[in-house]
Structures are given as structure tokens and as C-alpha cells.
Image 1 (cartoon, helix red, strand yellow):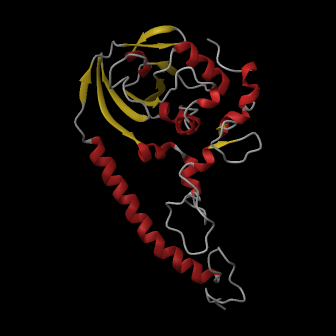
Image 2 (cartoon, rainbow, N blue to C red):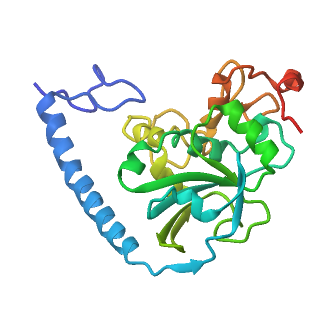
Image 3 (cartoon, rainbow, N blue to C red):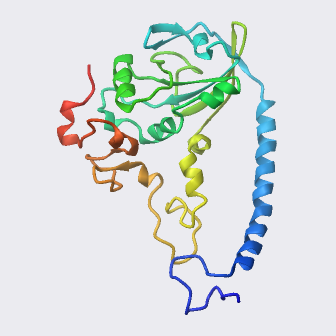
Amino acid sequence: MTTAPDDPTTALPGRPPIVDLATWQAARDELLVREKAHTREGDAIAAARRRLPMVEFDGTVEVVGPDGPVPFLDLFQGRDELVVYQHMWHDGAPHQGQCEGCTTTAWHLQDAAYLNAGGVSFAILTTGQWDEVASYVEFMGYTEPWYSVRDVAAPVGGDMGYLTSFLRDGDRVFLTYSTTGRGNERVNGSLGLLDMTPYGRREAWQDDPEGWPEGHGPCWSWRTDADGTATWGPTSRPVPQWTRPGATPVETLGRQGHHH
């Protein structure tokens, strides 16, 4: 027996209508048609992305890593392709003052094993001074390669907050693709999983049915206080930082802040 979606005896406020499995499957199959079309369009866009022209630049430009200055070419690690995330940086800020959006992206890119298996290297670039960057990387426990591109011109340096792809042909290096904003979401698996749930990201911009939980501002859950409550106040920090040893609210940060 199918339960009518608007049956007041079974409907749950602020939740999807209740139906039997066959009715659910029919609705799911109808949505699947749209999902498959979306997938095929994504494939077509990726094909067009592969056909973009590219820009050559000097691959010997130096970036600074744990071993000091190295040529950008070294980031390819002998492979022909390289993807970088260009991480925003706030000079002199304590760890919790660094960009929550960039923290979110970097946190979802902690292991490049599958990129490497596909012939692609990965690195994170940022405009921070290396001593500050090194302290932050150690605090976060990041294992992917980080480099300072302070005072380096685009496309290696310049504006941060981008995912960017490069191609190498011997000692020649080329910029092939770059994206920012919601284009960075492709690496954030958490957002993809949230989009599968009934309430989604719980953000105000979503197209939600009447009666759904009230939405918050974009990225509302990316910063919390020590109790895990979403907040953007002075005691907040990007969510993954609370898992780091020694993470404390701002009032006692002096014992574990940056080393200058």
C-alpha cells in the first residue's frame, strides 16, 4: 500500500514524504535520467577542457620548500603532469586565522597516491613566508609537498585560491587549466556526500522544500569553537584544526602559535 505524501497521519514535518519502496524506486529512476545527463555533460566539458590551448612560462622560476629554493620543474617529480592548489595565506596570523576554505580544500588532498598512479604530481603553493608555512604544515600534519611562492609571478604565484594544472615537455612547462570558487569543490568529497543527503549542506541558498530546516550562510560549518559549535567568532578555527595536538581557543593560543 502506498502512503500518500500528504497523509497527515504519517507525514513527518520537515522531512521527505513517506512512500513504499516501489514508489520510491520509480521516483529514484526518474531522477537518475537527469543524473546521467549531468554526468554526460560533465564528460563533454572535461573533453573541452583537454582541448584548451596552453601557455608556456619559465619552469626554472624558484619556489621555496623544506630544502630551500628549488626550480618549479622539480614539483613535477619527473612526471609530465602536475596539479597544484594555490592556498591563500594571511601573513602573521595564528594557525586558526588561516583561510577556512583553503584548509577545507587542502584537508581533502592529503594523499596524492592515486594522482601519482595516474602520472600526475601534486603540490600546495602559498604566498606565506616559508618559516610561517612550515610551522603551519607541521601543526596540521600535512604530508603533501608545500612550497612558498612569495613574490613569484603568475601562473606559479599571483592570486591564490585556485586549482591549477600544468604540463611538462622535457624542460618546457605550460599552464593548461585553472579554476577557483565552486570549481574547487571537485576535490571536496564531504560536499558531494552532503549533497546526497535530504538536508544537503543546510545553506540558505539551497532550493529546499517548505518546512525544511532553516539554512545557514555558505560554508557555515567550516569553522567551529572547541565544543564543535559552528561559529566565526574569535574562538573559532577551521574544523580540522581541532584534531591537531595542542589546538586551543584563541585566549591561550600563545603556547602553540607561529614560530617567527
